[in-house]
Length: 287
Image (cartoon, rainbow, N blue to C red; front, side, top):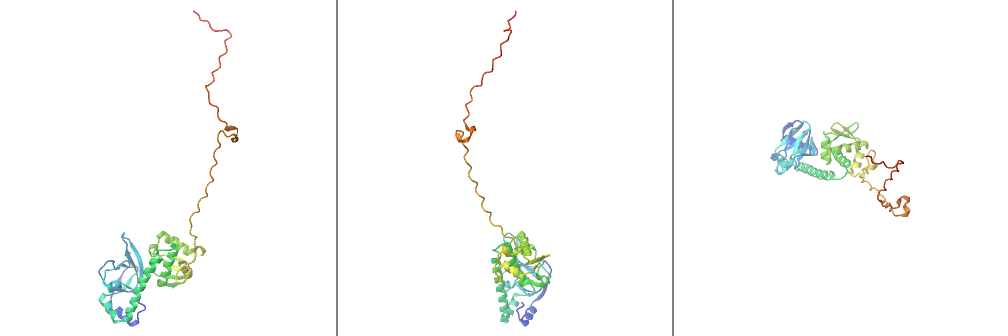
């Protein structure tokens, strides 16, 4: 609510009661009937949605100055997502009645909240488009470019995305697998766009990152022309066909050589030669 006028901001803070949450504690649970709105005064939370198979999907991050739960406070419907603290987080919890009364009495504050809700819806639409097209490197570059705009702080070697993000978190936000995140980060590091720290990313060259992402007026870069970005492997060319084998020459072909004559039919075996006659003649029978 940084865009609120100072008096509106103080009035909004004064309406809520202070509630603190530790790391891993749930502020809002999907499907819950509560309709309170929570203004984050310090800390950071993650917004998750439940998939049909029971898995949870990271949808967004929210930090100090932002409101969560305002949709249920405005329309009275059950919670549409789960919100979990990833850092010690302090909030001001406002009842739905107090929140709506505040907006009715302050048209300028109501306009700021409307713009905030519209921005979240616009961001959700953009995220769905960005995470469904392009290579893994392009998708991750888009995700990091969006994060650095909202959650970056300056450090000596660039802009650090100042929220704790695991590879699984980046994979969920970019719509790619964990293994693809690791490969894409290697490519972005080799291109000089980012440096990785423990559970964090430092954007060293925002221009290179945006060129890869094709975001915000930057032309979509040809990844093969950027340093360190491996050229995507295309389909393998078809193997050349082997020439047809020549037919084997016929045995009766006279041009096939001396060994092509037909074999003579095999006749009866020759008789064994007769034994030479004995010089003394045949033995006579004796009595």
